[in-house]
Length: 241
Image 1 (cartoon, rainbow, N blue to C red):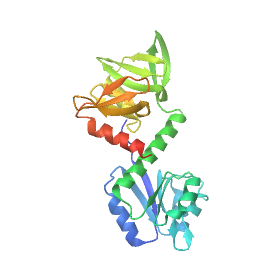
Image 2 (image 1 turned 60 degrees about the horizontal axis):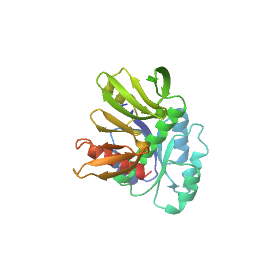
Image 3 (image 1 turned 180 degrees about the horizontal axis):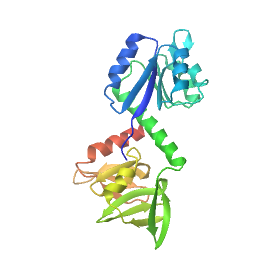
């Protein structure tokens, strides 16, 4: 499943801070900044006209508190608060913000925050219906929600779906299944093998100096060298959430 772009809006009263943030955001081509505002009134007018996925919100806007905007929005995006004052974090987290970043914003920290936004968005999509597969388990066709998929294994013109109900078989190519799965929730560990990120319990290097993942049912999956960097980055991002 290809990641769809994240639309975003920035609320920041300092022109230099806005410029610095835009420069940092240039490292994330998958994020499309639709506009900016320097005060709550302008921000609210824009956000009531157009919805965005993510709101980058400075908490200290002169005499205004950016968090006051959150309670006034009829449609609330995922919010990443930006501030130089960590004492505001308690109120921010009580409002279920996606994340809270101290300024100046660093690229690595912003990447972690955006991963949280994507995870929340994909979780919401799954809970409201989302993606399903028709597969066969023990001779019966069933409708299988993606939330029940623990892994995928290629088998020629078929795939084996490892599920909470057992192994299911489906006549489809591995690539077709892979393209339907949210990459922030599933790890491609090698050509022809995928595991659900939440099903990974631990990982270690084996005697051949390759990473091995241990799943919740105690089975192990070896990560190929060509997939190792992406897999370990995804596991690190999960641990930062």
